[in-house]
Length: 260
Ligand code: COA
Image (cartoon, rainbow, N blue to C red; front, side, top):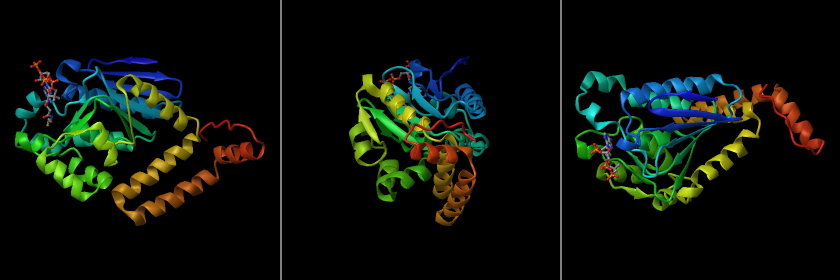
């Protein structure tokens, strides 16, 4: 299935969905139309029970997402800032029940880096560049950047990157734990698909519950995370997928999960 949008592309292939931000002429900067379409795409994906993993990438070779559209941003005031337009979008990315892989193919700056941070897993091409230019524009990262970055790479490094606006290459991003893996540009989507396939063949209810517990802890702290972990496992213990997964192991065959 391929949905037609103007500023993004959404394609599904078996149990995988691919969302591509498609404004290469402006380095895939996020304008309001793109944000609106991404919300619709996320809703489509979340309602599609046959999709087990979502991959997000940017069109073209040079940019994942070059942040918020600066033309729109210049005309916005505090009302729009309080609407937290991009923050809400990236929280929706983090909250979608299926695991999300960010395939970072180029510049991931400002909101682009914040979008990457909202993905469960980030892999990068060697052309990827990461950073927070916002303070140079007289604003701050406010779509999760000041919150998610330190939780992923630690407070000291996050403070340095946010306050200086220094741009990182893909290899430094890997060293800092900002991305899991760096591959060549030509290998990026193949690598994203391989990783997505590895997740998609596991128990779909189990990967969703595990993501829920990880999110609960990242957002609500250890005590909340531990409670959700316990509840998630209780639900999984009563699932058909658990019976199938454990039986298949004992019968030395591959499991056939149906997500129930
Ligand atoms: N918003 C709006 N337009 C943007 C944009 C953004 N975030 N990023 C790039 N563009 C536009 C440029 O204005 C330019 O438009 P033009 O062709 O009409 O002149 C076009 O995209 C190409 O950009 P250019 O700077 O020429 O490309 P580049 O490959 O030399 O550099 C970047 C790419 C991403 C390094 C550079 O465009 C950049 O720094 N963008 C802004 C990043 C940023 O500050 N993001 C945080 C926003 S809060």
